[in-house]
Image (cartoon, rainbow, N blue to C red; front, side, top):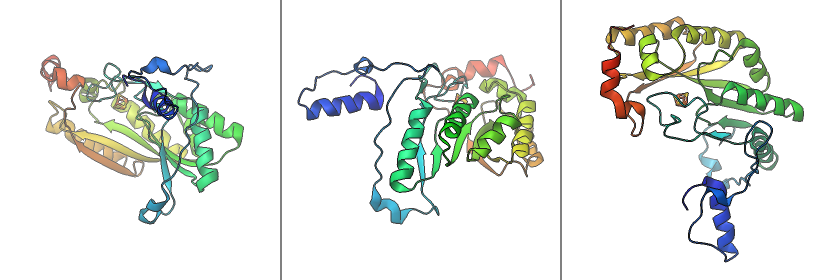
Length: 267
Ligand code: SF4
């Protein structure tokens, strides 16, 4: 199989069962159209739970991980494997993901979901809210996003009202120089505003921070800690991750030239 992911894989399986399998399959083996938002008109997967793991479940209620897109619609960050130069962005229809969620709720009583997209951006969050409201469906969910201006209190309140209990946000750093080097596409001021917006909407926040990005100084690292202290009551948990250069990221490829372009005294 050359490419095509789960849809082509399921085509291979059905061809094997029907004894008509070929040697080579590619993405063109699945003929799908696009909806009015430009997303592939895929079909819901038949999701089946392995029942014998239930006894091992530590959470008070089952939480099912589900995704609406592979890759990232922003896809510019220099340290990230979802950078669009390395990884395609492959969104699915939001309605199809909700079909799957409703089927899991009906069959197994699962009402809590982790939307595990790398970046469930505000447009997709709004489409999801549209669909929940249209179907009058109620589920609890968490998602991961980045700092967007469009995550304003109105949008966040709407997400909250539609069951979003937690947002994971990649802050990464509170130094504008480091954010520029990461090509995060926002400044510390934008991140400050997002924290205020989250608080106004009553949204719980988990954030990610990268420690030791190439050329980060002690002063810049302290700026990040000061940011977190300032927003202690708005930011409910933090994950500190030591920087590791992932293969096939821009930093991995161009680490030395980036450091030369913008040294630690440029901020
Ligand atoms: S760090 Fe997040 S926003 Fe940036 S490219 Fe990766 S997934 Fe997208």
